[in-house]
Image 1: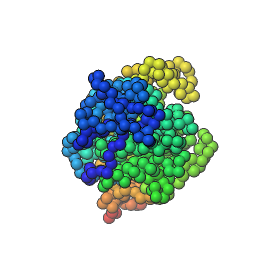
Image 2: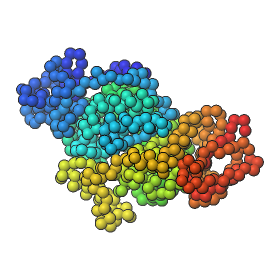
Image 3: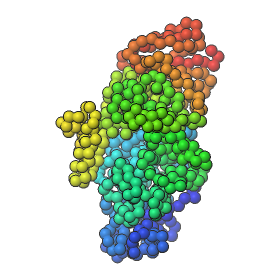
Length: 617
């Protein structure tokens, strides 16, 4: 679609045909001056009654570095800086994205029902850890069957490496990964391959180091509300209008200046907003109104299981396209790995519960949870299953484990293949975490690079949070948890792409590629039409329809061996099994016996099989 937009910047520094414009909100300041690096005298900005200071200078060109003086104090980076070439404490740099030569100008986007998401962290996705290096790997993902990549936050952060959730320069792509134009090239390359690009954005808090917002205004944060990370962003108190405008402009900036196809809003349960109109529906409305004919996809991470997030704004909802739905992950992790501590205590992982979660999109629809005894969630009636994002791995579910272990590190690989089939053929939208497709041996650990004092606190806090888990009640065991501040922790989290091409890992890659190829032939499932049933205590069946009208049934067997019976037509045939020789070095084939309309499946171990009834059967 066309790149035309009615949006234009109003914060930070932006370039047009007459020069470079500057605008910063500093309502408590009497005077604000622009200081160009290199010794030039300060340039005063004009004050407005609403607390904004503005100026336009025809002689300041892209690449010029600058800071602000507030009533003669300091030299502070721009809170809406487009680039911080020397780090978050250094000067800001003028950036002009207009001359960028987009090779894909009419990108139609991806239909929501066709989404297969691939979450990646730019710094650890490749050895180089850059936007440019990530762009070189995109063709591989397109061949796999991925239709959208989701970048973990790229807003600049303190230090040399970080997950991105300590971002403080919300408009500036991290200089650790490259330049703003490098990010544009990554997105342009993806679009050329038919792959959408989504961005994880964090508005519930800013990082603790390099956050200059409060230097400019005491109204950015409020002590009236608190989050797990401290004072909440001010979305509903005095002067919140300008804070909300800052947040929404940031979202628009990524969509329009970089052509991201959508956003994943981090931890929206921590966006505390008691105003008449919550900021999320306000944001979704603005983004869609100004996107023109572009197809946007806006998703939230929120553990509350509230269907209202997915209802149209006109009906009182938030207008989101999708929500991360972790309940299926928790059910499968409980079933496959036996995890029962923390939030896993709320799940049993039975075949019945897994099937129910598949039918509903999430498990909790209003019943009390075991740990808190309070109702959680609402029903999902009328909501298409593709609007629930499901996974076996994501950055949280791997990286928030003490040792950063992935699910396939702790369960039998036969079972891993079986649950992978369930993920990739389920009617919900699947999300893969980088390296999952080839069963990467590398962990994904929690890592930071803060200054010494803060770093020591982060290390101690990281180990302290695991004190209640049985594996780490011993203080000596907790000391063995990798230090987030150590360079080795960051380097150990980088994917090994040479590993991806070795025979054992290639087999896993073939399985994922075959399953995704099959997925892309399936008809989208409408609300209320998910056919998922428990065949017995060890098996779940999931039925889908293919584009040729044939009916496919995936049977996932979680046990260590046994036989199940099911009704099928006499023309049913097997089209894929996770025990096929192409996918496993030691196949233990599933025995299929048909008598009349009955089919018996005998499994030697955990595995999955897809059988198909042709339309003429």
